[in-house]
Length: 320
Ligand SMILES: NC(=O)C[C@H](N)C(=O)O
Image (cartoon, rainbow, N blue to C red):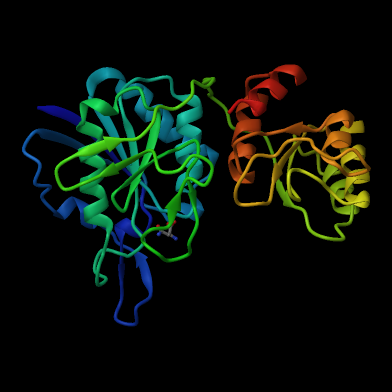
């Protein structure tokens, strides 16, 4: 018999649609009213929050992380239910800050509990199946939705409403769930995990665009931000004016992290002209290899909260 800690945090999986079809939170999580038909598992269920995931921020992520840490090895695994809009961020935060071997599996739903074709209960059961599977140890935090297992490190929400919304554009799906089996397709590369006990840093994410004005970046410098993530163009390039804005931020010792606004691929310095990645890096910008903007923001936050030196930050953000 395996013991699983379930932490419900809210999201569509815990909501219902009213007579007009509008979706809203329920007082009582509908998942608590159902019996999961898995004989070999004992669940300890806690409703840690009941909020939409747009209301989740790093402070909530830290609370979830601390609850899991406090649980220690009292459990064989943890399942976290969560809204899908920021699920990738909470899963990434937990994956980057929890050094544990037991499985931590996150799931959610795209359709609320009483909608036709509701996927919440099914995903919940799949997440528990993954959490109790012996093959799931030492795999970091996983996201289970729609019969697929994704690594928190690579997963992202790709569709506004489709139940097949989660995908891992760089790595592909890490595992699949069939009626009878859990099948893993690859092992993850090792990565650095930093502990965290504070989440006070202010790090906005800015998306680059054709004709971007560097003034926006200069204005941000005046607001005492702790760092800035730029979703740059292509492999990590900016227009001339935006590049001057980056220079201004760096001259004020504000870390600038470059990711790509492209959906697939890795940001790395390729072009040597004003605004090109080579010159941005030479000026001191950091290239984050495998993460999108929202995850780079959490990675920089974790690095800064751990007082990493500029060299250490660079190494950490470039780690795959
Ligand atoms: N499907 C969902 O869970 C979306 C919802 N707005 C949330 O993230 O809380």
